[in-house]
Image 1 (tube, helix red, strand yellow):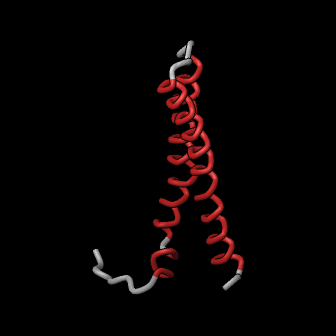
Image 2: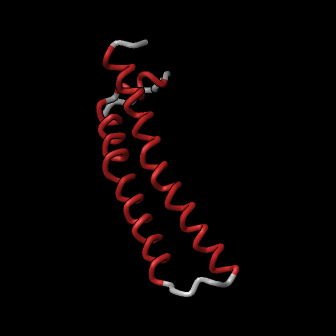
Image 3: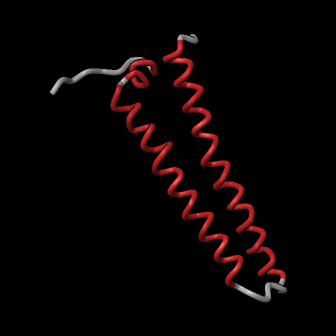
Length: 93
């Protein structure tokens, strides 16, 4: 096993294992977290009838905000990944 020191971000990003890990994270783990979160929040909103108290309305609003965050959390890292991928491998510097 070789012992080497990484000196720049380009060396880290050009490593094939790092790109594979980023792909797994962006296209596997992140969507799974988002799907489970959205389904859980939708179920918590739909299952509890009679949300007329102020605290219950606050919880429903929090669930809606959480759904919006999970959807944006799923798309923003993919956009960053694609931008870095295009810059590195299409020839943009």
